[in-house]
Length: 314
Ligand SMILES: NC(=O)c1ccc[n+]([C@@H]2O[C@H](COP(=O)([O-])OP(=O)(O)OC[C@H]3O[C@@H](n4cnc5c(N)ncnc54)[C@H](OP(=O)(O)O)[C@@H]3O)[C@@H](O)[C@H]2O)c1
Image (cartoon, rainbow, N blue to C red; front, side):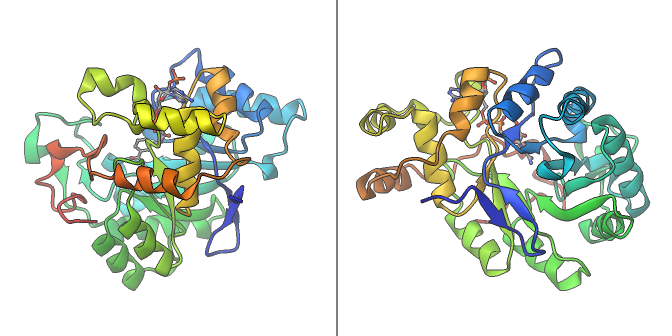
């Protein structure tokens, strides 16, 4: 049976399923957090860049104040955005996030991407070219992340969108080891090599875009999400589950945590109800065969940045 929590290399525990919040709109994300807590979620994936941490914080505060959940039962993640990679910006940016989330500490703070933008650049500098880039080394940023632990503002620290070489270099040069590397994982991009690489070094993968960001796929030309594959619908029918549940169960079986995003109550509830069935060997073989190394979140427009992570196999 699949485990509902995974132990990190510092002994802390991360719930296997968390709620994603990217593009969870104002006016809806508050209710999504309430529905998720009611539905049993204790892990929430946030980021300064998503621009909705204040509304999430209000919902968390409400649930803690009315006794639905205790702070120490929650596992809240946030991420440092690319314009703030200077060592002495890290603690102030986490303090800002904590004030939005109305929390005294974060459970996990991540470097959102290994590459930096200048502080004065737009947050999303499309079309600005290399002018917008900063070559601040993520090793410098990591020293700021370690300071977050030293000051008691973060219980754990980690990275996101780091490739194997960046992980290795960080491990050789850090005082505090990262606990998590959050990267895209879905059946189109099952990341088995990176998962094993990180596992061998005591780092857990959290998989983002686990459902292939399904509703945007047709519009934005993303790779066709596996959860829309008729064969996956057949597998789901056999187990009396939905295609999304089949995909999430498969991903968790790879030894990772997943953070599906939804603002729809029925889907929020559905996406955590994935632990009561086991896929057959032929189901797993089919889902394995869907791997085509295609990304939803490749950020190819920044591929000439010195620290762009996806120029090597994994
Ligand atoms: N570290 C990074 O760089 C990074 C990058 C991308 C994402 N993330 C994190 O990962 C989270 C998840 O990724 P994502 O939001 O990009 O994509 P996703 O979770 O793969 O897909 C979200 C989409 O699927 C729909 N959906 C959710 N559950 C469903 C279900 N059971 N049946 C049918 N449709 C369903 C949602 O619609 P509704 O909301 O309308 O229900 C939404 O449109 C993000 O929210 C964010 O927290 C991190």
